[in-house]
Image 1 (cartoon, rainbow, N blue to C red):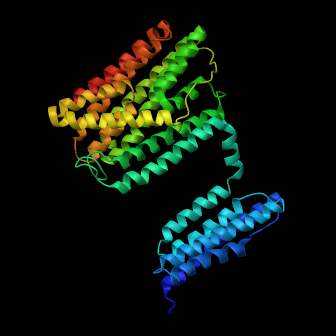
Image 2: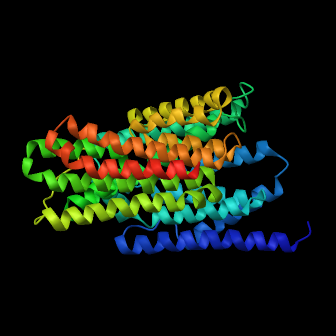
Length: 421
């Protein structure tokens, strides 16, 4: 065998991955004064062994599979022995297995995957306190819901991709791409879940305004309903609730704009930047005006929001997203751009579904940027009006207080829509 520069570079990379993770494990063991079952040298050697096996037996997949199974069994056995010796903990053993697999990735010619896996592993094993605090923020039911959702999503995702095209219009790279839909649900739920964690992390100690703004990233409709219910129980929160609902609308604009950028690309995002900025600034200015004019003391209140990683809200979004996507395609073919505007009615339920669907259809070349932008703006306007009706279901006075700001915001959305056309 000839030692090539590529072999040397790969070997050095394997050493570095083993070194950085082994150093963290040794450092952690020293901090916790726990028995050190594997140190830096062990991790380096394991990564090198994985690399050498993959490099030598690259053309013999069964040998590699047998090697991985054998090493995994060995790690499991060692961990069982540690458990019998009253030394619980799976982290180091599993990390050792991941380092071994990283070495195999390097040997198979996938160094970037090995580096990515190594960095993710290092981040996870070095963030023990943060992860424990994260777990403490959520109830057992919320954690169970999140894990169940992720399990289902990670199973469905490869299935939708593996099946390939199942219809001339449905499949990877087709008009409706199920894989893209699942990724969209994961992305939106991740934004919402992050906001949900922030609310649990900081509570309402920073005031209702911050809680409402972050809550709007989870679901502006749900946050509006929650705030309206609080106002019904405490009429003194009328003005504060008005401001908070306006801020949920503002965070809705931000969330949808991020989704439009991801799904539609930078060109669509740039064209939509000014309209979204106008709506966002207008909403914030109205909120500041009401605060200075009517509010002397900011109360705090807990928002009742459903875990975004629960299956119910995720499936609801997926259903609305799919309906809007299919409706857009059908109406576009039947009635042209005028038909697409009909799907903006979905903004009464979820502007995010409308924004994501239209941005994706623009990216696939099914609709023009002007049609996508004007329909999204129409959905924004209808969503603003819907907040009045949501509030009306709880407190008439709150709906009356919201009427002029939301009507103004909605009207501006409609005007910009007309101007774009």
